[in-house]
Length: 223
Image 1: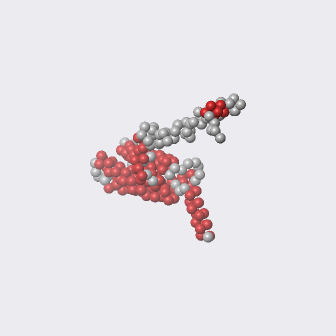
Image 2 (image 1 turned 120 degrees about the vertical axis):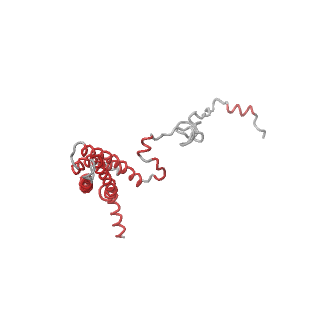
Image 3 (image 1 turned 90 degrees about the vertical axis):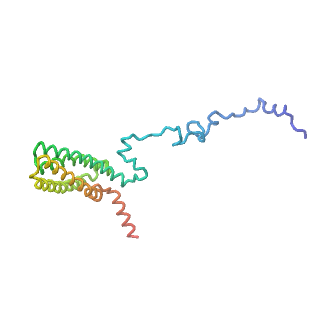
């Protein structure tokens, strides 16, 4: 049987009785990229020339991005606690020196005023920033424990500054002010380390995790 000629084939394709062949739309010619670009040619995150969201210097420093792969939740919490303690420390030391040297409030009175001045920002930064506690859940118990720890720390700081003031009573006025202020600074540093352990174990505890862990332990024991 003779093969159909080209004219026959063209005639069949051009036959007006046949429905026209559906041409692929421009959308069908696109690739699977959401924006119509070839995913193989689209820039990948991190590729040269791709705009990346950069951290500001302040955020890089404050949120401890400089720790790199050492930036674990535990170290981040410790860093934030330390930063908050520095803020409270500077505040309380300045207030202490002003009230002790210029207002002549005395060692114990100046300690109380300075301690309160540093405790307020310390509470806010510790709860909301270091331990990332939000809402009012457990705030009453946390506040009570925080006040208790603060009172114990206040008594210890008062005893340290009073003992130093009595020990250097015969020195010059400037030397006495500096030594008593230094004793207050030293007591704050030592107590900050102890308070971190107390805060982490007893005050700013994630009670949801603790409850989950306790429930899991009971289930495991029952099995």
